[in-house]
Image: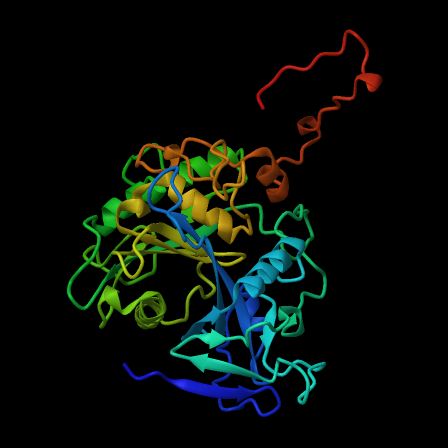
Length: 384
């Protein structure tokens, strides 16, 4: 295999990269152009395929560099750089699907800095080893860490519902695809055929009716290629081509069918159903603070897995315990066995995640537990 190496000087970054495709106002990437030598930083969270188990060397979080909708490359970071990126994501200096990686940072010194050049090596963006990531990242104007409480009027506030959703059943060039028909997928995800335990029903229950995952059907498609909230897309490459090639091909073909780039004005969330490609120890993954999630094999039929991935779209991180990234099994953002079944997932996000989402804001939801402010006859009963 030919190794492709391109040197991108911080001070002579080529301006020939294609401009960022226009998109709807909900897509934060539309606010930024990389004509100055930059890309949008995306953060993809992966869920292991085995309940309660995290394989050795499993990467639950991976960073990508999005130049436009058809050109996304992984960021190649050393261990310290990845740790720094994670820290910035937590404290809000880095907001996924919003902050930029700048190839020509204004404070770089061309003669003494380690940050002399960025390389695109074998289809990944390699940051110079030992370089300080903060110098490359144009941070959010107002930091919004993942744990920031959402309030009405906040630019990152995305409730109330309904929210329009689309599932894409992908068929590759070898004819490989999940066994479920579009109608079956519509029922598993949205309950359109009578399924009582679905991603839609659980989101509605967990949010006390504030979030409705509504299936949105494109017009003009027949029942062989679509169902309520579901379309079939055939790509001209095999799934073995890998994550980036498959995602790009799916978005290309979906745009031909729909007549616009996803998510367009029609959709708030898009779920892609694929068969296994590269490193098959994952069940699904989703992009933080975004609209896109991807599900392998049967996991698109499991409500708990879908809610876990949509949680990342909502800007939620994993729920850990005892030094395990997925260890809180009381929460959808862990990896308890309750997530992994078609009738499972009858659980919600934990208290910290619910506070972050801002779903429960009525006066009756607030309880004063300070004994100094209560008399002996003042009691409270209810459901927590």
